[in-house]
Length: 261
Image 1 (tube, helix red, strand yellow):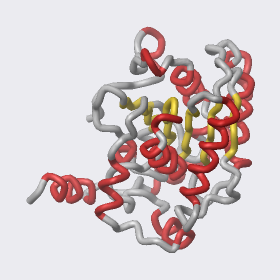
Image 2 (image 1 turned 60 degrees about the vertical axis):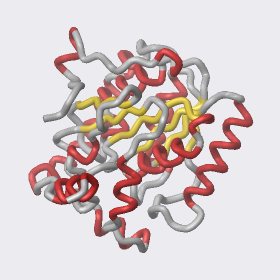
Image 3 (image 1 turned 120 degrees about the horizontal axis):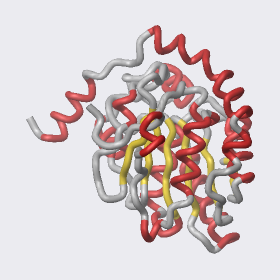
């Protein structure tokens, strides 16, 4: 059996999060409340340098769901952009092409590479766009994005097939999506994610890839204070002197990095 087939066979053994974890997705409103309560602390995080940040929403979601995250980015001194394609119904015809056009336009306006943040399925867009537009991409950050493992190891694969009209079972696409872009790439994930099996959000180790584990729901990850902390830390990195996130000191109580067991 080839290495590729072995990998796909192994990932097909992953299962979607169980019913208990799915029920825990109900804590998302509390994460939003925690973000509001943590606002004074969040405003002490590293200030941005004014570079543009494009934010992609998750499956079935709209730009309104990323408004708290984009407001946070603006408050820290970045220039955030919504994806402006309405509801995310999957990679239908023309979606990725419009993503490319938007990155071109933002780059032309700022004359600076664009950081891209993708929540859930939006992270797949960010990674794929960055692969083809690495010269215009500063970094990629994904939140609970299933870019490895079999897509059926999520509780949203049926919704994806219904909304996009595409099958999730495509070995070539699975293999393509698994590979990270050639820019600093961070995956933020949670073992208590009730939608995506956490192992589906783990980058293979590499000089420009990393994984940051924290406690969050899938639905609330984009407004979880810990996720916002990690995002601010990563965006403040100089891409020419990029270093992985360090979970040392007090951080070790809230974050975990390194190989996932």
